[in-house]
Length: 389
Ligand SMILES: *Cc1c(COP(=O)(O)O)cnc(C)c1O
Image 1 (tube, helix red, strand yellow):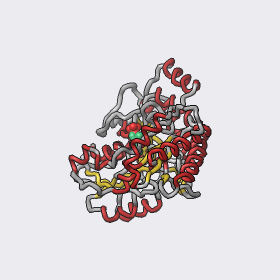
Image 2 (cartoon, rainbow, N blue to C red):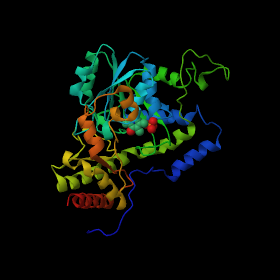
Image 3 (cartoon, protein in one colour):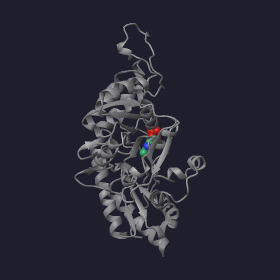
Image 4 (tube, rainbow, N blue to C red):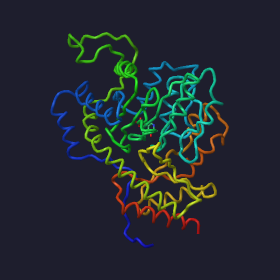
């Protein structure tokens, strides 16, 4: 051991400032708690950050995803292609509509959906494809768009880990029909709970905003008589509150700097780990001028022979103050709900399984400084070598 001082490095920590707290307090000191200017400003600022498109705030990433299928009237009898390796919400959003999710394995170097498997899985019932930009690594959206156009499929991008990620200089979420973000506490920016539904198409944004708010025809400021409106559509209440929007707004201003810190942390951590274990580990990554990650976290995938060491490695890191996570703990088709319902044969998604059962997610967010990164490299090497000895 060369570094004797144990550090405490959590996997994630919301970065809330006094100014953010003041913005929330200002809303509480006023009298507009929903349907107000904070959500409108948050939406406009989010679209600005992306460099275009339309943004509609929601109360979670999950509800944004569900709103997309609701808008496209996808339901029983329809099929939606989904990643086997993703957060459960990507798939639950499909399942909740009554449509059938059809799982696609991932690329073992990025965690993103393996697009070469798509065409074989498309049937006359396939209506849409959903992709997750895994850990913020953009999916090759030009290829996906090409396949989707040929088969008349809608594209729903799950961008929950991908604020700031760009493919060919276009922000993710603006390639497909709809993109969905999450502001859950460990994500790039947080509103406690919350999400954003984005699209490059104005008509989708306008109609989806109505569906999101009980299917009411007019916004508050469009009503000539207070309280008077009609309801032409069926719709849930997936609105964000003014308190949440106020909390998110200041964080948008810090996003670019936040992602730059993540990039530096990520590259330093990747280089350190690869120089110790090159050939025996894979770091999920795909940086190029064409593909800008948002560096959500750094996932190290152990080689198959070392998979059984993974849980002990996590325990050892925890004892030394290194917070970790697992993105994601099982391929979705192996989660009990889906395993029981669809009874898909085990071992059908080997690359998703490789990541679920053989990877460790390490922190790179701005709460981690350079000395922390060096500590993580050193402790990771020490722990893994100890387990191999
Ligand atoms: C966090 C996350 C979600 C869910 O977002 P919520 O805001 O918690 O509903 C969906 N997809 C991915 C990929 C996520 O990481």
